[in-house]
Length: 143
View: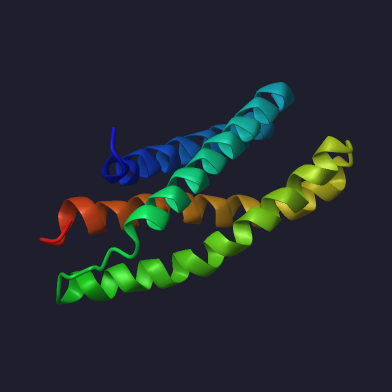
């Protein structure tokens, strides 16, 4: 594997996170608390691995431009510019969400999780979409 394989790894880790977040939400809604905790911890691990791979890739490769024109460019930048600020906020939000859970303060955990869950899902899904648009559907000739 080379550094150029990491975007595909990142997209896979984001997709795994998405699946685990949804499964964890289903588990807590059906009162399977241990399964919920396992799913959410696994989603955190997948997201942390993603972040490490993402940072390593961009440290070595730098910026990858989206070169396609027309409506795909508008859509790409809309997704990217909504994804980026939420991606920056999700790390502290996750920390603020798991802290009360670890302290068994589940009312506080539930209050913040109602915000964290949809933002984390959006970041995970749009991360996969950014990958698909940049590397699969509309790849640059330079990649």
